Length: 138
Image (cartoon, rainbow, N blue to C red; front, side, top):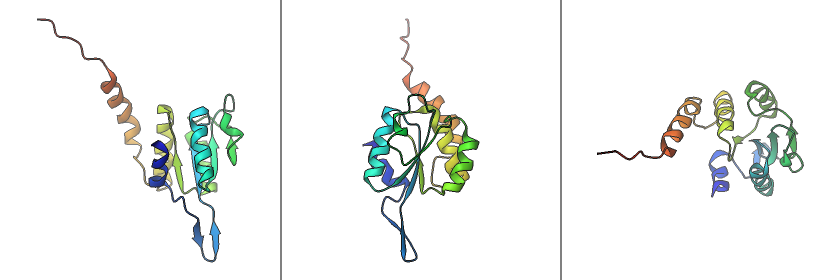
């Protein structure tokens, strides 16, 4: 189900630029086993994949079109490279920490996204949601 989310964030079809057809570009934050599924699905849809993650344990570095060995918390460094890439979208999966970077970059590149404020709100909402209710004593 999470793979279908790609369609709402990026244009997965070929993008026409004049007479030339440009391959869509997607930035994926993270490259572990979970993100690798996303990398493979994006590539299967014809997207050029640009992946940022620590190199250690990054299985996606072997499947991505472009791999950048930069920590997912280095949002300014990632933003600088993204400005050169000019991606059509930026996504993540299975990483609360990457939400901060994805929202930041989406906002800075004027992409549709949640905005940086959700990077602050969602962890709080999530932690409230997962806390067990305490039984009241009578």
